Image 1 (cartoon, rainbow, N blue to C red):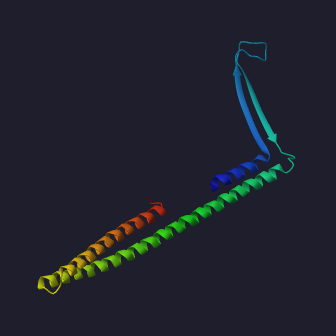
Image 2 (cartoon, one colour; image 1 turned 180 degrees about the vertical axis):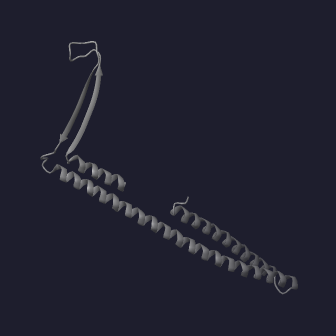
Image 3 (cartoon, rainbow, N blue to C red; image 1 turned 90 degrees about the horizontal axis):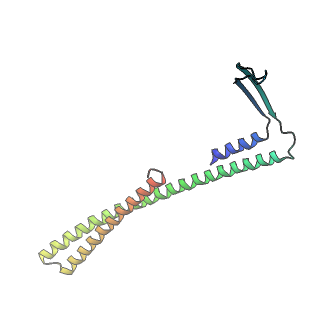
Length: 170
C-alpha cells in the first residue's frame, strides 16, 4: 500500500508538470497521391512534437499533490501500526509459550511426586500399614498429575503454533 501510494503521488505530481511528446512516421503508397495518382511508389516522412504546459489551474495541482502525500502518510502509519500489532502478537505468543513451558515443568514435578506417593501407598498397602482409601487417593493424585501433564503439553504445542503463526511461518 505504501509503495502504491507513493507511485500515486508521483503520478498526481506529474499531471501538473509540462509534457512533451515526440512522434514520427513513415508511409509508402502506390499510386502516388501527391502527383496525380501516378503508378509509382512515393514515401512520406512526418515528425511531430507535442508540448503541453499547464499555465494556471487555480491551485488544483497543489491540493491534489498534498492529498496524495497525505494518503501516503496514512499508508505509512497503517504499515507501522500493523508492524506493531504483529510484534505485539509475537511477544504475547512467546509469553504464552514461556508460561506453558513452566506449567509443563511443574506438571512433571507433580507427576514425579505422585509416582512416589503411589509407590509408597502400594507398598504400604502390601505391608498392611495403609488402607485401600490411601491407595485410591494416591491413584487419583497420579491420574490428576498425568492429566495436568497432557494439558500442559497441549498448551505448549498451541503456544508454539501461535508463535509460528505470528511470525508468518505457518
